[in-house]
Structure formats: C-alpha cells, structure tokens
Length: 148
Image (cartoon, rainbow, N blue to C red; front, top):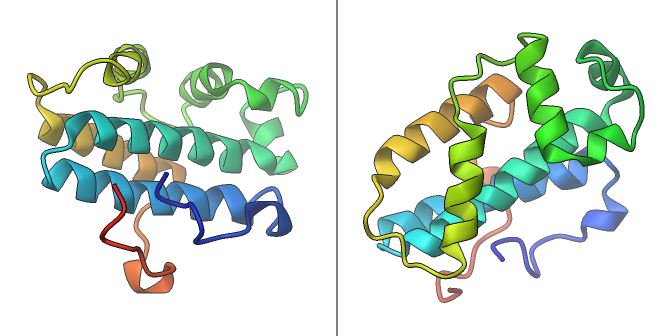
C-alpha cells in the first residue's frame, strides 16, 4: 500500500493519521493510474476513500453534524458516506455503490475497460468536498517510485 513505511499512523491520532493515509493513497493511486495499473490504482483510491471517511468521522463535532450517533457508526464507510449525502455535507455526485463494485472487481480483474479519468474526476471532487484535497504533495513523505 502507498503508505507502507512512510508513516506511523497509530502514533498520529484518530484524525491526523487517516488524513495522511488518505493523501498518500491519493498520490499513490494517481501514479498507478498514470502507469496503466488501473486495478492497483482503484484499490489505492478505495483505501484513500476509506481513510478520508474515517478521518471525517473521527471528529466528534463533524460526526454530530452529519447525524452519526456513535463512534461505532463512524466505522462503517457506507453509513458515513450516506450520512454525508443525507445532510448535504457533500453533493452525492460520486457513485459510491458503483465504485464499491469496481473496487471488488479490482481484486480479480485488471479493469482495463473502465474510464479511470472520469472516475478520478468524480473521486477528486468528493475528496475536495470532504477537505482532503487539495494538498501540497511536497509536504508528504517521499514515495519510493519502485513500489508497486
């Protein structure tokens, strides 16, 4: 995974760790997609999405704003995403269910038949709505380009 060896998430806290992991996976996903490794890119951005939702829901204030009753509810990505859409914290333009099916496919298929540019455009809009994007890549730990 794109964050392996680049961070010590557990020591970073419930918000800082997932936010950094999301950003590292966005960077890694973009690189993999540019390299034509579509399935690996989708898997990386799926982890970025999960980390971003974890980060968002880790804040008690944000959790209350979107109507999640407990920290346990905040551990369910689908529930967090649906709460964000329901409360209009995000637009809902990102097709979570389609992306979830695509992610499952990425584990057994190279996904060479998908339009990853459109997918990334919608994904990046979502990450911007959440506040994960934009970020300065120079602030991230250096990536080993030799990693898968």
